[in-house]
Image (cartoon, rainbow, N blue to C red; front, side, top):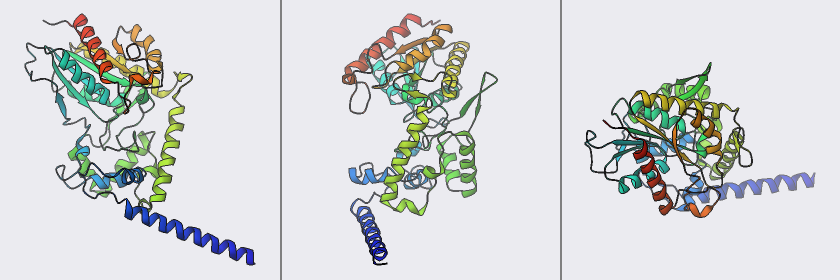
Length: 370
């Protein structure tokens, strides 16, 4: 009986200290309430990573776009932010080149504009954009403006995320609410299911109406492979720094397990996976559609650091079979050489310039203008 009491009291003490520890962390490393505060302390940011997706959205979202954090405006398919990297706007006398993709794509567009001022260079980007986002952005953008050259950017890490539908599910640590369609193969034909909202304004309408928001979560449950209620839904447990740390560890573990079904560093991509099959269909559909639209389609393949040239290898047969132009980074920036990458895992500046030069040469060699 005495030993049971000792265990009982010891347990109470442990839980008591854990509660005090939890409270102390929340007080000492309080995360800023201002949604536009972009420089919280590193400890505050560390303990914030594990907050639920809805909890993070609540921190950054207000009733209007102007009152909300800047990041809620990033990456939308409808009414996107379009960046121009030159003063040129006259596409009648200067070829228009448009890039669709993640930050690597944006950086390449910027360097290309610096190297050659004869192009109108545009970029549509989203944080961590996956191939399905880039393809959807192209389909939407071509209705607004004709580009002489269209560049679809794909990176190794994005392939396993092809069956996601939002910047909330594809990157747990740093969420953005932008959305994009879920693509499927139906009888060998590429089909899609669009989320209920594709713009920042519509997102706000859904987020502040519980019935609409619940219907969106039901749509995610049915369409997004990375949707997980334990990570997504906001609860009172978000107030616990310890729970937030545990949730982040769980998010990391569950994502790695999902990625392993599509890719591993030793053997590369599993060619029979749904994600790889969808990717191949997307690049063929992109190329054929661009050619019908009198645009020159190019694939920009970003082989991420320490992931070899597996992206190039898995796509090369499809690229060759359909005569699709491409620039693969593995030639200029061997991915297993870490000196080619900076601390953010982007290409170092000199290498990015070389990639931009290669893209300029590829465009000028193949472009056909009236």
